[in-house]
Image 1 (tube, rainbow, N blue to C red):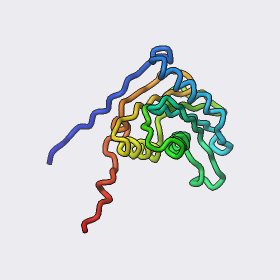
Image 2: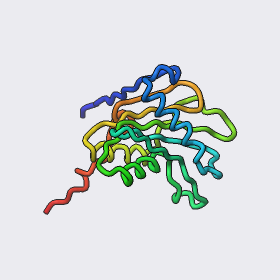
Image 3: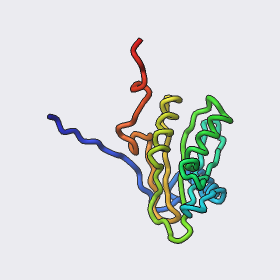
Image 4: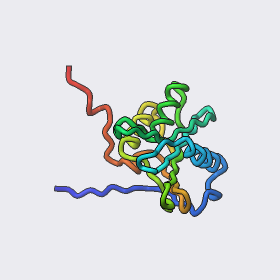
Length: 164
């Protein structure tokens, strides 16, 4: 038996002003996207902003449904819209933030497992890492280069290939 260790790398910032101007603006767009959230059931509003290589920013917010699995996370709303409207244009970065109706979110909001898998697929498709920037309502900001830091044992399409 061999024991192996996985290492996760991320940057931590104390405030938005420590990010570069482009990332500050992207995080502000994610904050603005929260206002489009439809979250009457969880009362947990998430906003995401995707920066494309051509400079376009696409925003998304979580959209809930009384049949819970029918809803969609902010990250996937933004990424799917970006790919539908700008096919072939690579995603450079995604910023994610949230607010809750009954408490203050002081820690960075990371994408759920399904969104991590979609980010992974996007990276794989474009053959380029995506910078992921995460913040709560207040407090520290986390950023990482590439989804492998949030999803280290990623499921990739090679697992789907069938023998002929």
